[in-house]
Image (cartoon, rainbow, N blue to C red):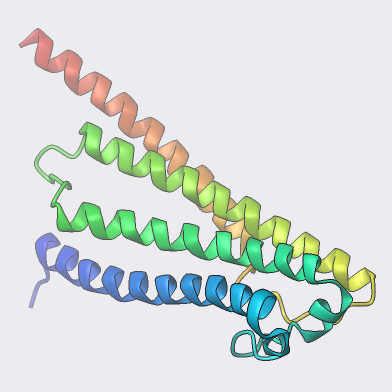
Length: 182
């Protein structure tokens, strides 16, 4: 049994939806729990998210708690937006395999590259901030549990996608030149 590109894209569409829903849930959870902890019940800093106990950070300073959870929320929202773009491009069927060099695909890849770079930068910032808080004597959860790990991977992916976007941009230019000469 051979799987063709159309079937693979359908499978990727379903997987992208599943991941999109998951990262949206996580982003909303971070935002809601930050608000709830700061405004309604600060005891819930201990139960912020599974495997995330921010009670030490909240006791140290609620402002630092807000800053760290804000960075976590920004990263989560950016990951959600990345998967939103993927779901959207697969749903709208903007991927034309007969003519892959088109402006829609170019914009899509550029957006993914910018979002990946920004996700990497905010992840790196969140890791550095957590490290700084640790030097102040605050007990911090594991970086992986805070969903801030992998900043280097996000940066690498962003640069790689940016290079691919530049190649697509040049491919569109060549395609346009060839259409004008015919």
